[in-house]
Length: 174
Image 1 (cartoon, rainbow, N blue to C red):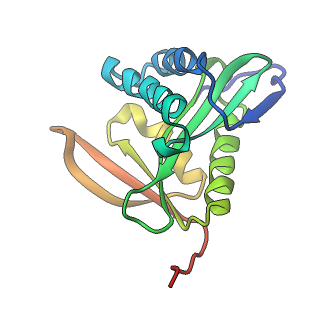
Image 2 (cartoon, one colour):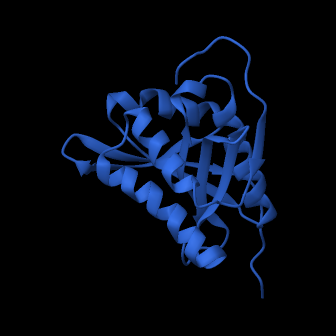
C-alpha cells in the first residue's frame, strides 16, 4: 500500500455490478503490478459472471466509487458445501487511492454483508512472495490470522497462505 497526501475523495459504496466495471476492475488489477495477465482476466470474468447470472453466480461484490470512477472493490462468495464460510476472492484499491482507508472500508463492508448472510468465517488466500508482504500485513491489521500454508502451491518457492477470521455464529438448520 502506498501512502498519499491530500484530500480523500468522497466514496460511495454499491453492491450491484455494472457492465463498465469489468474494464475498471481489469485496469485496477493491472495497475497494482501484482497480478499476471491470466489473473487480471479472472478478475474481469467474475464481473461478467455476476452480470450474466446474477446471484446464481455465487459472486458478491462491494464496490467503491469516487464520483463516477470505480476506485476499489471486493469480490466474495460462500464456499461451496460449507455452512456460513466465505472466501474473499479479490480486494483491490486503485494504487492512486491506496493508503486512505478504502481497503479497510471494503473489508468491513464485506464482513457486514457476510454477517447479514448469516456467515461465520471469512477466508482469504494470498502468496508468500515478498512483494505481497504489505498485503499480508493489511490482512493482519484487519484481524485475519494465518490458518494454513500450502507449500509450493503457486510455484516452487511460492506458498499459498490462507488467512481466516471468525466473524459470527450460525446454528445449522434442522
